[in-house]
Length: 373
Image 1 (tube, one colour):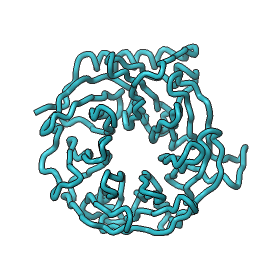
Image 2: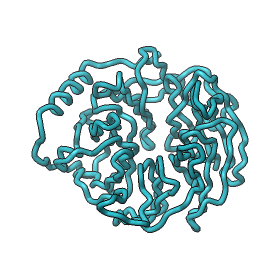
Image 3: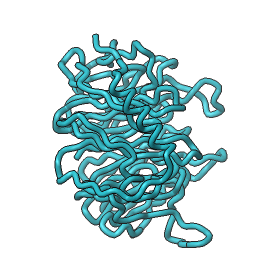
């Protein structure tokens, strides 16, 4: 079986990154990837440390460039990089704790636009952004962005980075905390939004009206990720909360929901001690992957949840990020190590019943999300 191994080259890259970070600011560098295929690795960074970063990996050459945002722009990415998305030659990065969404050129890494929360210095009654989380693109001129603390989903134009509207979610705080809006997935005109923190709801938005029209309630709490498969089924993964929480704890579950009727069709139940997360789907839309200690794989037609992982976590790594290249089908796994030092990314090839380690490389703090160019 394949293990989470640490390759010497990866550790050398990690040590080199740490040395570079302590050497002070550098002049702006010029990059041009020429439209070639590549992988953006977003490193979340530690809360309030301002050490989020962006790496760029060339899978053909097996080379990585770290801190490309900082090196291209002469400024740090910010505090807590939440997610990353590619659209029409641009990379969009919501920065949770900085209240900013960056738009950068996918080839040069230079900033082309910015959308940020209103402030006392720049008040805007139409700006409801507080802590942006995820983006869903409906067209080249329209996108949604969810929020950790705001009871609104913001509508904006990705070309101009200007706010064009807002959707009230109805998730006002009842016990001192908002039920945050998180990931989004679309089927037909319906956009599904999971409410993660202390909630059991998936919102259904009519994207033609920009309005919440329904709420799907799950038995298990805290849906953390969701995808739509090739058969028109919505899959939602919950973590069930945690022991001792004042909001309670349930068994984590994986749900299959009919995206047309919004009816829950099947519930796959995990043990309370498990903490599944980061549900992903391959490019063909027929295979699911998620973190549950190791990396699990599951067909969308499976009658049961997997009993053993595709990639076991025998070395007890801190698996923090997961993504599947929609073209190659290769699996990228982010390892936060101990949350105090730069992380490592592992690249795997799915061989059916197991996975083959292709490469590994050092990146920044807490590698959590990926985007494929």
